Image (cartoon, rainbow, N blue to C red; front, side):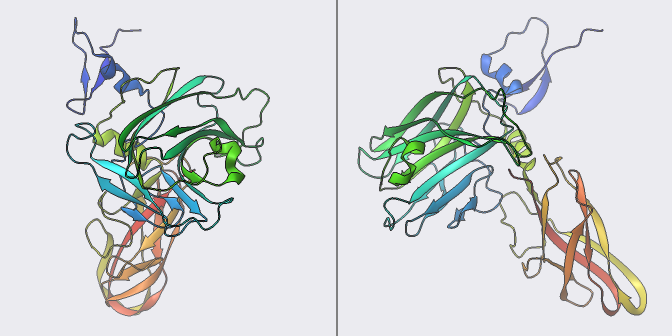
Amino acid sequence: MALRTPLILNQSTGRIEELAAGDTLFGNYVEGLVGQNRLINGTMRWWQRGTSFTSPGYSADRWYFNAAGVNTPSLSRNPITAGSVDTECIYFAKIAYGTITDAANHYVVLEQRIENVTTLAGRTVTVSFKVFNSGSAGRQIAVELGQFFGASGSAQVSGIGAAKYSLAAGLNTITHTAQLPSISGKTVGANSSVVLTLWASGGSNFNARNASLGAQTGDVHFTQVQLEAGSSASAFDYRSDALELALCQRYYEKSYNADTPPATVTTVGQVAFFQYGLPNTNYAGGMTTAFKVSKRADPSITLFSPLTGATGKLHNAGNANDVNGSATDIGQSGFFAQSASFGPTNTINLRWQWAADAEL
């Protein structure tokens, strides 16, 4: 087989480049191609779904926010003052909540599900991150790992390496090492994952999962989260914005601009289909949409009217009305969007926005 010139991802330029003869590389350039960080969007750079969330669900790309038993829980994007954390970090994920209403059963967590429970199974792993404590010194957080074996798989394993950490006021760096169990003899089903959970607060019914963290107060802000093989934390593995967004879009993609939340009233990025000179009779229309990035599995599709933001609708600009829409033939590479029948017109001018969700 012929020799080939090695390719690297140049972290400075964000380009894939050939390695010239005699060149030497900084370690993080080599790691940039392979990727030591098993998490995606660890710097909280991408927020395709929006920038503020008050209900359980995905928030910053790949990050799932969940809370119960507390008043007014929220997760939001919080800009970082330039250079205060790192020159390449621009956002925190800020967790805030009010009064705890259920001391034993409450929880406030942020988690990421890493695709495939085989990831680093039976190996030592290290989690590292920055966390800003808006409250007083002594406030605690906890770190937990878990193994989810998927649909019809073995029972989930929670509380792996659970430990809690006391924070100083202001910015903290946390390093946490744990051993992921072997999965020998386990049954792995569809949509399995390794789960990293960051606990902001948790009641006594979750002591086994959060090392008896207990009730905590005060806002906490997370960024630069990394999970890697080995017993020590290495420098944070930065990726170019283009590569990080592509990794996120394997799980969630939309027609809108990256920073425009779904259901925003805008025609920027809309998909359109139109035809003129038709006789007056009932019509319907549709068109195939191709994804920028192949999804990890067949996604769920939500359609939006670009003129009203209504869910499950296309907009017929021919008569200035929304019409019911549906997505069919959904696959990892795209889908077919179509309208319901609409009344007499001599113009079909259908427009829509969409979001595709293939999260774990």
